[in-house]
Image (cartoon, rainbow, N blue to C red):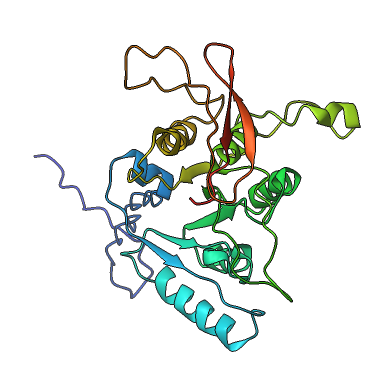
Amino acid sequence: MPRATRPRKSVAEAPGERAVAAEPAAQTPPVPAPTPPPLSFREKLAGGRFVAVVELVPWRGTIEDEGGRKALALAAGLAADPRIDAVSVTDNAGGHAMASPEVLARELAGSGQETIVHVACRDRNRNELLSLGWRLASAGFENLLCLSGDYPVEGYEGIARPVFDLDSVALLKLFGDLNAGRWPAEAPAAGHGAGTASSPTRFHLGAVVSPFKRHERELVPQYLKTSCSRSASGPAPRPTRARPSSASWPRSTWRSPGGSATPASTSAGRTATRTTPRSS
C-alpha cells in the first residue's frame, strides 16, 4: 500500500503555531503611455488645422503701471484658455508709441502660451532689425509677423520721423537668411564672425497680405510677401505678368504718398523704380 504523503506547509510552523498561506507577490501597476506633447503653432498650421489667434496691443508706460497690470492679467487669462492657439502682440500699432512687444511676449511665453511677435520696419534701420532678430531668437521666440508699419502720428515734442530702411518684403528676406544660416556679407570683413552661422534661427515667418489693391505696382509686393514667407531662404520667384505680350517690367516709377523711390532690376536688364510700401 502506498505511503501517504503529508502536504507541504507554505510557511514553516513553530511549535504551537498554525500554518499561514504565503501571500502572492504584489504586481507592478502598468505604466501609462506617455502623453504626447501639445502641437506647436507651426505644426497646427502645417497640419491644416483651424487656429484661433488673439491680438493684444501693449500699453503706454512700464509694466508696473495700471495699464501694464491689466495687460498682464488679460494675458494670463488668455494663456489659461485652451481655445486660444496663440497670442499676437503688436509693435507700436497705428504709429503710436507703446511698450515693446518683447515685454508682453516674454510674460506670455513664461506661462506656456504660444506668442507671435510683430516686427515693424517703421522705427528701425536694417542693422537694428538684424540685431532684433538675433535678440528674439536668443529669447526663444520663433513666430514673427513682419510688417512695414504704419506712419507715426505722434511723438515726443512732435511727430516722430519714420525710418523705413527696409520694407516687409526685405525683412522677410533678412530673417529668411538667418534661418538659412547666412549672415550679412560685411560681417567677416569687420572681424565679427564668419559668413555662416553654426546655429541658424528657426523663425516661423508671417506677413500681412491684402488683395484689395488697384494697381499692379501695389499687388506685386503682396505676392512677394507670400513667396518669401513660404521659403526660409533665397529670394522670392519673380511673378509673371498678366499680359502675355509683356516680357519685362515697364520703365516706370512706383511711388506711394510720402515714399522714397528705390531702384529695382528688371527681367530685361533695365531699371525701374519702386518705393517701399508704408503699410503692412
